Length: 103
Image (cartoon, rainbow, N blue to C red):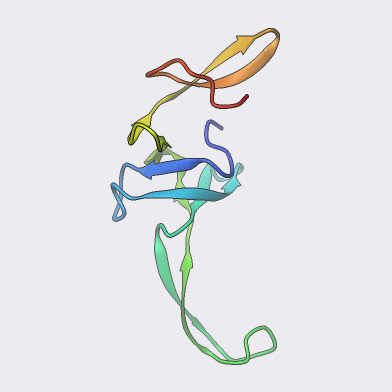
């Protein structure tokens, strides 16, 4: 998958289109990502051992990875990801600038 945990992404489709956030979790088998502050849903919770008080809480739900693009903080733009092999090691690169994402 081209998006990893900890990456900054911009949402390109859906109700949160245009928002940015940090990837908290990647679900490889379902091709989905969990982004901080994106796709918030309300959940009704009963009082119990886990939570002393019941009520309505807001939680993030996963989105399909195709609805997000990596985001460059410095240039304030979203970009496509490519791969390049340098000295026998595979790196993710920014297709617009050609810069490697990892060091």
